[in-house]
Amino acid sequence: MKFSDIKKNKWVRFISNKYVLILILFIVWMTFFDANSYFIHQELNNDINALEDNAEFYQKEIDHDKTFIKKMEDSNEMEKFAREKYYLKKENEDIYIIENEDSIKKEEKR
Image (tube, rainbow, N blue to C red):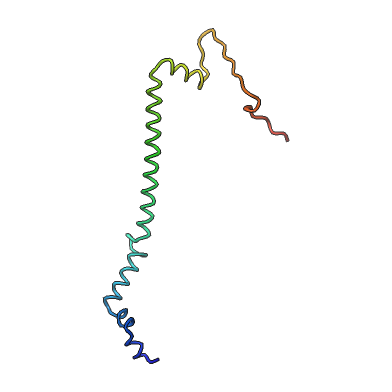
């Protein structure tokens, strides 16, 4: 096969066109090397999705805390919470904490 035969090929003539070469170079540059490349956009999109998930999680936590605060406005609920969570007691009152054997951490034998 001669070089002139290769040059006459339809695809070779198309690809060797200066506008096609510039377009291919432009596409390669924008995909891999540019500051606004495709891969950087994908990474930024992933970051945006992660941040939106975090925002959704924190919004749920805010809603949960708002309901807890609303619940704590009742003095009976506040007393119940303080007694269960922080083991607070009234004067002249004894508190006994009963634990099951399976809930107590055992020391590891050496």
